[in-house]
Structure formats: structure tokens, C-alpha cells
Image 1 (cartoon, chains in turn orange, yellow):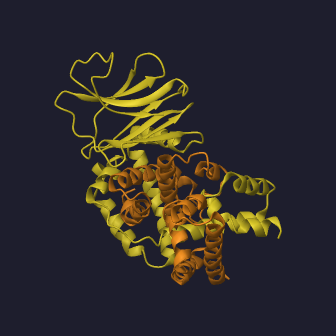
Image 2: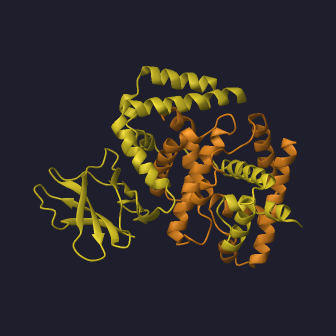
Length: 165
Length: 240
């Protein structure tokens, strides 16, 4: 756990802090995240998945669950526990050789998004907001927000897919 | 547009848990049919989401957080030279994709060995983790941004876990006490505890809980010789 914390603690703290925007809460959630990692490390398949991506997923999910509980949105959106039961989270898959290239391609694609697209991706991926919540926050029609999210994700998906092919 | 093509547009949001109920149900009905193409799309979406999340600007965590996290595992006190040597070796090995693959295995080994060193603590952590991750576990937070603050997790069959932070040291001779506050009747004292040097504490109440009868989980400070018939100085009550 020492090595794990020293290698990835900063990244997980950053992911969680970005979501909850409160240092004390972020510290609580980092501690809880490491408990979850401890309990699930046996489910991680190093031959199929990327450790960093798996850890980031656990940290981000914990932060989003917290935000939902604060916003009182529990029950209105997909529960991560439901997703985990399906086994999708056992690995965050991707051959290692592809990952670095994919990572670079997605990072580059993020910078190519227009301002509105980037804004909605930040709100979904960093702050865990639903499209309805984003529409409310940005005072835009829900259909417009859905269009922005889909177009942004399409750019990112094509960047990742193109780099992997 | 067939179902797969339509759903493929939604998998990033699905794996982020951000779809509304009707969209989610449509996807889950489709996945239940065993669509391998969509399963692969979901794995790609998970990876893409993780990459995007990982582009967050890096912050340096406060130094005390390392101590707090590691002390929770009973690991820090037992760090020894070989472990530091291992860490240094692991750092050197962090070059290239193949090496990262190797490190994943070593990290798992280290986690397993740390667990063996302290079986009792591991069992406690495992019990807490089981409750934290079990489907159906309810979570309530208390005092975000204030002191004390934290979360309470309740599972009707497995029990209750409370994770609290920024608890000051109890006055000499006093202890912290966890209470279950029922919907009717007097609060019940459950478990005394002392926070660690970082002011954090984890208490676990294993076993079935009648969630319909539990109104709140509370923490109090109790003086020496307290009869625990009722809380002396309530610090917070997390309402379920």
C-alpha cells in the first residue's frame, strides 16, 4: 500500500479534489478510496487492464457517489455498485501498448474541442453532473446539452479509436 | 440506427453513472442479451473516461494525508528498510510499458503481505470494505467542510461503518462513543473509540441493522465512568 500510495496518491487526490472542491472532504474520500482499492486489488487483472486507469476509475466513482449524496440525486442515476455487479469494473481494459498512444490521442482531442464542448465534458467527467444538471447550470435547453456532449464524446472516441487501430 | 449504434453513443455517460433511468434501463436490457460488441464498447468507454479523468491538473496532497491513509492499514509503523528499498526499486522500474505491467503484480504482492502482517486489522478493514462496497449500502455524509466531518455507511445485513475526520483528541480520560439513535426509544451506545493522531477514526458495527428503526448514527464525547444511558456531549448526528 505504501508503494501504491506513493505512486498514485497524488493523482487520486487530484481527481477527487477536482470533483469535490473541498480539501477536507477530498482527504476523507482518498482514505475511503484506498480502502476500496485494498478490498478489490485481487479483482484487478494486470494482464488485461491498466492499473492507473483502474485506480482513477475507483477514485472518480467514489467522488461522484459523494457528490450525488450531497446533491440528493441518489436513485436518479446509475449506481456504480450496479455497474460493478455486472463485472465491467473488474478491469479497465486496454492493451498496455495501446494505452499510452490512446492517452496522448485523447489528450490532444480534448484540446481540439470547442469551448462549449470542453465545458460539458469537464462537467460530466470531472464534476459528475448529469446532462439535466448541466442544462440547468448553463441555462441551456437539455437537447442542446445532449448534442454538445454527444459531439464532444464522438471526437474523443474517434481519437481513441483511431489511435488504437 | 440499430440498438448497438445508438447505445454506443451513450456508454461513456452510462459508465459514469450519468444517464437517466429510461436510457439506463434500455442499455441494461440490451446488455442482458449478451451483446459482445457492446460489452467491448463499454470497456473502451471505461478506459476513455479514465484517461479523461486522469488529465486533471495534478495537485500535491498534504503530507499528513499519506500518514493518515497508511496508518489506516497498519502499514506505516511496519515500514522497514526493505520496503523502502522495494519502493526505490519500483520507482526505477517505472520505465516503459512492460515494466509497469510487472509493477502491477508486485504491488498486489505487497498488499497481500501487508495484510498478512496484521490479520486482525485486515479483518476489520475487510469488514468495513465489504459494507462500503455492498449493493444496497446507504451512505450519509455529515459536516462537509466543517469539523468533524465524514460519512456513515449502513447495510441492512452487514452493519454500519462510520468514517470520521478532524476529530480533536478527547480530553484526558474521556472517550468518543458511537450511538445508534432509533426511531423511537433511547439512543444505544455501540462502540467507544479514540481517533488516531491525524484525528480520523473508523468504527464498525457488524451485523444486521433494522434500517427502518435507525434514525441516525451519532458520536459523543463521554467522561470517565459514564453510564452510557444517554450521550453526554453530542458532537454530531448523521441522519439516515
